[in-house]
Length: 328
Image (cartoon, rainbow, N blue to C red; front, side, top):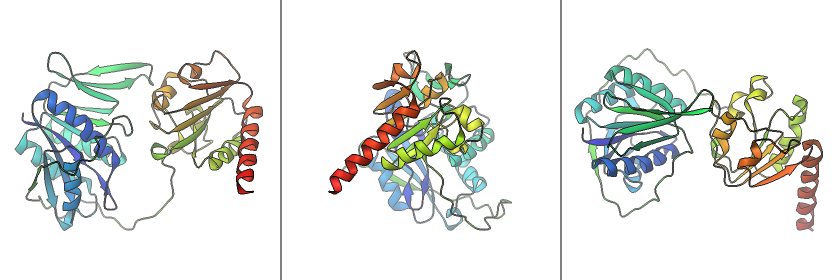
């Protein structure tokens, strides 16, 4: 085994930020193991993106540049990654826990007859030199520490849980062009692309989230108004997502989204372990809850013990008043 390999995901001509996070963690693993850090990039006319991967920590980028890879096709990507893994024999192979990573990684692992640990929140090398993968289990109530005996060790890593390295344009690395395995008929046909605006909580700087303290679905409008005033998005705890108050992409927590906004306002959220697992690393947490013993207050930087139906409207009024005074 000779390296740590990171799958480089890209969209619309830009490297997905989760790739840079994986390279940051991969750099740490590679240094501990005494091996190189590699990245695999598949696409069409994407050599400039390969340079970005080097600037963010990769020692070597395996580039598959071919018109058949212009659009993501899980079968074509899988075939090329399986061949690469067999040729280069990485010790570790990391994917982002994105829709693409969650679709691709299991197929690669199955073809290689190795294990896959999904939705990891950490991965490290222990004192014995063994690779340990960490993921929440039982809806976030415990952390499971997992060792994979087969090789490579494969894992999908949650977005916004790792720290990327700063971009360094002075870094040197090699770009290795690989022969592309052409799969003529994968059985997958892209008929058309439909643009649909969906909330991306993982990228939001401000999140106003509601929980069981809300009495009616219609009361989410209050949180939406506050979020819009702050330039943010609305999130919900799992019970509200289960009830269908908002689509699942708004859910914060272990079974939803892991978020790290600059500001997280928890309204009527008690703070179950599975919810805390998804937001506790936010830069600033403000909790509003009528119960002073709610677990959310243990992770909050500021806590307001009170009825959200009184507190939130008052915050909205104050923000509007300050914005009005600035305009004058």
